[in-house]
Every structure is written in structure tokens, then in C-alpha cells.
Image (cartoon, rainbow, N blue to C red):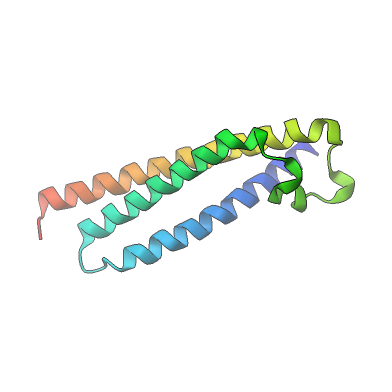
Length: 124
């Protein structure tokens, strides 16, 4: 059961990140004629997304478990007992948010570095 809840947490957070990526990608298209600016804009957007995920990770253990998307995704017969649900859901969401935050921050660093290198090596 625990593995299934962790899987659902990854699905829930990944879906939210996909919407963030859509926003960053759309914003990046606005700079399609200037690669350095497009990479820097995408890097800034990803850094903001990483920050939001980190904040959500910090708040996850205290957020009421019944108000999470993860709780709604778990079938009623598979839901943990109310006594342990807050600890379990909070811990799993915290770990999942941190996982996605670190990956998003890594992508942000690469995008920002790429934009900086492009600007330094081939200024437009």
C-alpha cells in the first residue's frame, strides 16, 4: 500500500510540474529569436518553480491530509487510518516535493548556465 501511495504522490506532483513546464515553455517561445534570452527566461522560470516546490515541501507535513490531491487519489478502501494518515501523507508529499524541487533546480542551473555561455561566447 505504501508504494502505491508514493506512486500516486509522484503522479500528483508530476502533473503539477507539467503545467509549470508548459508555462515556462510558452514563455520561452516568446524569446524564440534570441536563444540566450530564451534560456535565461526558462532558467528563471524553473528556478521559481523549484522554489515553489521547496516551499510546498516545507509546508506538506502541516497541511491537512484531507485537503490534498493525493488523499483524493487514494481509493477509500486503500486509505490509511486517520491516526497515521497525517504523518504518512505529509512525509510522502514532503519527500516527493523535495525530489522534484532538486531536479527542477538542476535543470534551472543548466538553463541559466547555457544562457550565460551563449551570451558570452556568441553575443547577439
